[in-house]
Image 1 (tube, rainbow, N blue to C red):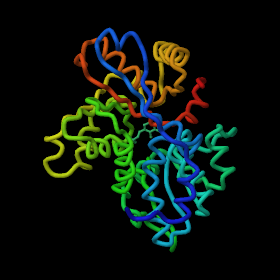
Image 2 (cartoon, rainbow, N blue to C red):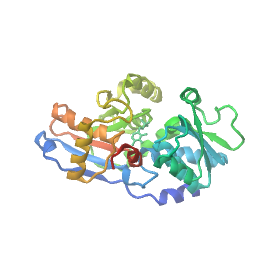
Image 3 (spheres, helix red, strand yellow):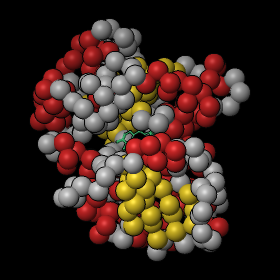
Image 4 (cartoon, helix red, strand yellow):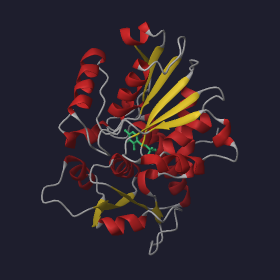
Length: 308
Ligand SMILES: *Cc1c(COP(=O)(O)O)cnc(C)c1O
């Protein structure tokens, strides 16, 4: 075990535990399966979920390189930018973000937080935003100044996968199926790499028409791994597309919250949870199986969606 940069260690020390909690629900019992949620949402109110997991070793790398600024990109409700701005402030790193779309007259709660934590916002057109996606390596963005570290969309880099892999080391119960919501698929790839060989990993796409995701995830996997591992992405639970929802989804989420007191949000975790219940009804899981959903956090994003 190598030790973390002291500043990062201090931030990690502020985080809470992420327990594995069993959800007691007659529906699962009736099918003979057990259902657990890995509560990464509890790590911290802001630096939570997979965004912390993905940022951890990226920030470590940047600090060790002596970077003083992290430059990244995201949408106006981005959980990634939200976690990055907060972590940057804590670590004494400047942060700059390219934000998709025009600057709104009234800033939403996410953007207000970013500014409050000192992130410099540069609003760019959708076309410019798309072009930024071409730059992957930390030094690849043209015109980066000395000390600036580039972080691509969603914090999706090789180092992000190492942080995600740590989640698996924290789970000391055996389980058969692991389910997580997918945006870029980087988290899913990190999980596929880290789970025991026999475990099935299911990604639930939050985007509509996410057929491309399988290839994106494969790019993160080692030779042969993509074929040897048991994993799939379900594409039918996007509820109209990214950040869209339906009364059916919201109703389901409200019922789940009132029965189990685990907060979820409609962009990612609500969809993943809905998918699990729907697959359960379809008889997808086998009796005796243990299913774990990774709660990827992101509850702040729900503030703009009339939920939470
Ligand atoms: C960003 C995010 C995801 C998607 O993670 P990827 O690594 O981009 O697939 C899932 N859930 C939540 C809550 C997120 O904020």
